[in-house]
Length: 354
Ligand code: F0G
Image 1 (cartoon, rainbow, N blue to C red):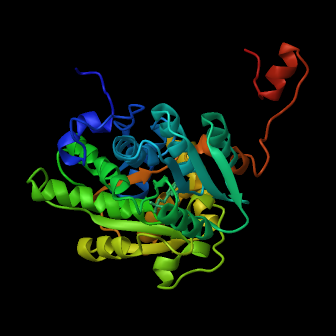
Image 2: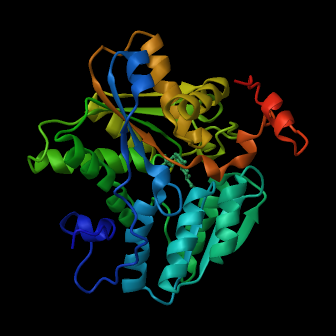
Image 3: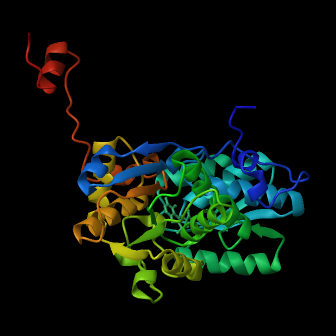
């Protein structure tokens, strides 16, 4: 059928599933790959946005969770689905668990989870555990739980997650006809950079692309363990999706950077918020702050003279802006109030009569 039925259906031979795996899908994937005219002009390159916020729960996490929850239903249907999360993984895990008919529990830091993500987990019916600590504490606890209790951990330490998240590289190559020169993305727990690099590598090995991109990962300056080369005890950033001090896939991120001849750099909260506004205002794409870190990073590297002209660049726009309404409203909404009279509305709009 030509009707899109999700990643497992589209990329089955590349995924760890068999005919006896029950497919738990919300028809994730097949997200828009958009030409970014303004960013292309700013950088003298050909810039594309892979809009992962268009996935069913609003982030790229759905790619990994569809595989992880399908495998959980196949191999451990009596287990509870568990994850640690800064919000997006919890929303995705809760949704796919609901669809599979499995119970879910999500461990989130008590503070700093964006409102939209919590709203999702509440409605999908997950047990929400607010831990008085950081994401790194939540992940440590979730791993300990999974060692001693009937739970299936669906963080990216679960290899099925990484298998699913590779598929974005397949979609990009299938759409562009080859791998891009550079792939930019935000980095937090570092599962995604690990998975996407694996995807590009798999397609290149199968001769479905002629090469692999350089992987350019970006962390927030207050949460940049991979840039500093040291764990950050108290990570801080406005981009709370990537407020992580001790990434689980540390080695995967370093390998992706080294094998691809890429880089992992830090961007400040100011640069992130400025890219957040630019992306919506100039490209029409409303993304959450963590996603904007990748745009901020590309612009910063261009500013440092590290970006040759004419390259083809794909940016992972990792999460939907609706996830975090509070950050969008930070500087006020600049709205104007009027009476219900047309003349007053016209005046509020600065319209002149013709
Ligand atoms: N962008 C968004 C919107 C995210 O939610 C995350 C991670 C990342 C980027 C970074 O990806 O961790 O694979 O390096 N969010 C996780 C979560 C930690 O719990 O939702 P990563």
